[in-house]
Image (tube, rainbow, N blue to C red):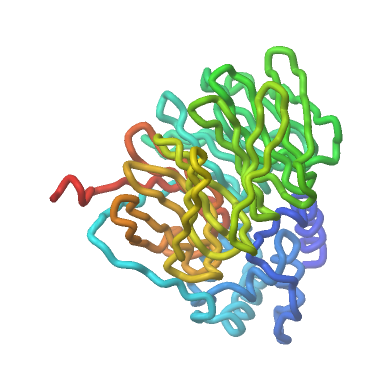
Length: 419
């Protein structure tokens, strides 16, 4: 047992990065006393804060077994597995401490799930390739993968040591790129050879975060903890990095508007950032409500910027033409912590990550009305959607980081078409 735990803790420590722990997790308090406490703290706490267990909605024994099995294989250690499950089941049964508020409606969707190969990889940020396959990042698994949605088979590519990719994105030719969030790099993968080409940041301790290509093939990206914005010219390898105008802005999401202007969200202050792609001058756009923080945003076809106000539990709209800002309270309230967001077919889709289950929310722009659904992960409602992207066929690609799943949300019936 001691040898098993030592090996497990060392392996997990290599994948553990403090700043990658969910924003919803609070500082770990003392776990309840009892047999299994030390084992849970060693095994579960090696990869993530035990506060994620304490702040969960709790589970039955069967659901705890399913959930832990998606993170680590304990099937050959039945005594260890049973002691962990006994402790979790006794001390963290189902509860309503973070209950979501579901909003009914007539819009229908279908969820299609794929389970990815490597356990505990923290799969995230799926994006559709022109050939219909789906690329994704396995952050804790130090990999990016390619899923065939027809066969359900996936191939996963190991990245350079300590990359811990925060995202994967495709360039204008369909090549996959990733952000080395831990080792201060941005990389490009050759899917045929499996080899990567990496570009080092000026500061090797910086944290490349979210990536976006413009129509000319220039790559723009954010650094959250380092409070910077960057640009990479893939043709020359030139990297230019600038600071955000204000300290602790925590640049996060990145999108390019129709005119080729990069926009960046602020996860630390109430603002959006507008970048001049040639000069790299940054303009800060203040958002009016105190306590506003913006994880992610989406630019609609009409140029309107829709954003999640994660700090206040609201959905926001910013009009770059006149500066008008309007916000709506998210159904589950001020602590719902909206996260991933995308525009799709006249509606804004996002999730409420601060509640359990993680809720997928649809906001009808014309009617200014909400509808929501719980995001299941193989029957277990656990995990967080951190980024959402659309498909060419009119679907929504999402994920659940705790359960190694990529999920396709397909609209089954559009209300407008039925009326």
